[in-house]
Amino acid sequence: MGRPRFLFPGAEMLIETARLWADLGFYSLNGKEEFHIHGVTGPDEYTAIVNNNAFTNMMARENLRYAVESLELMQKKRPEGFKALAHDTDLQPEEIDEWRKAAKHMYIPYDEEAGIHPQDDGFLKKEIWDFENTPTDKYPLLLNYHPLVIYRFQVIKQADVVMAMFLLGHEFSWEQKKRNYDYYDPLTTGDSSLSASVYSILALELDYLDRALELIRYAAWMDLADVGGNVKDGAHIASMGGTWMTVVYGLAGMRDFGGRISFNPKSLPHVEEVRFPLTVRGQMFEVNIGKDSVKYSLKKGDGLTIYHGDREIKLSKDKPHKVMKLVNKV
Image 1 (cartoon, rainbow, N blue to C red):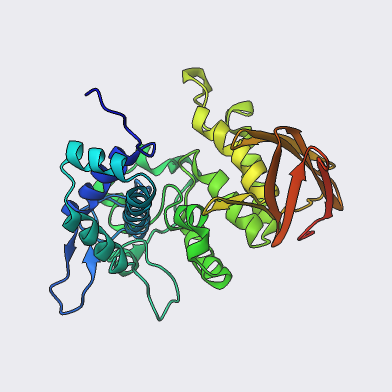
Image 2 (cartoon, one colour):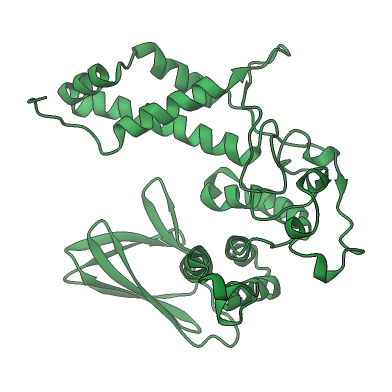
């Protein structure tokens, strides 16, 4: 078009995805100002076409919030670029107001009596799957039961609400995470190789050591031990990524909320040392977890600020190393 564009990366995508959620959702007719999203399927493939999947609504809310915040910042910092963006995407001011309102009033399922977030509006009303009388050779369930049978029960293929608690952990209290985890873990078959890693990360955060180790081993052995009996068809690449996540997000406890990189590392029995590199904002550093302490080392770059628990750590060329006691030693 011949004119300079001072756009934030991904701005067009934020606009179009925000439009998607605004178009899919609607405000409740029950007298309450609640924004609902119906007829969706969340991460759990054993529960399909539901109303107000908690994961979906939470992620939609995050998307809408981020779109509003980014566009307002762009309008302030790069007004000419914002005008060009608005022109090219036919963005109207009332759209941003609409997204802000939808995010504010997004309905997130919560059951006061159980003290948990239902996976969707109808999940807790279903019968619980008869796990006790389901033979081991009937797993994965999707290979032995018709989907319309599975959909009628409380049974989960892979992390759903638990995935939301991992990705949006700052939206939940520790008590909420514990209650949700305690409810959903027994209902989860792990028929998906992607489930173990996410559940292990939350298990470590909640100090469920035995369960965490069981899940970490399951994720690591998926291909090495041919757990699913299908390595002949190819490796589980996403599960391999999940295994990496169990180390970085699980054992090291890394989180990135609002651009704040923090670690809550833990030492586990039979694990002598955990070491891995990370590149953040062009800075490369290494995390080395021992039995009683963790060492953060800047390898490349001018400097980086991270957090060890709530304690700020500034790594620089002058002070490239920092040794800290473990925040939580299990």
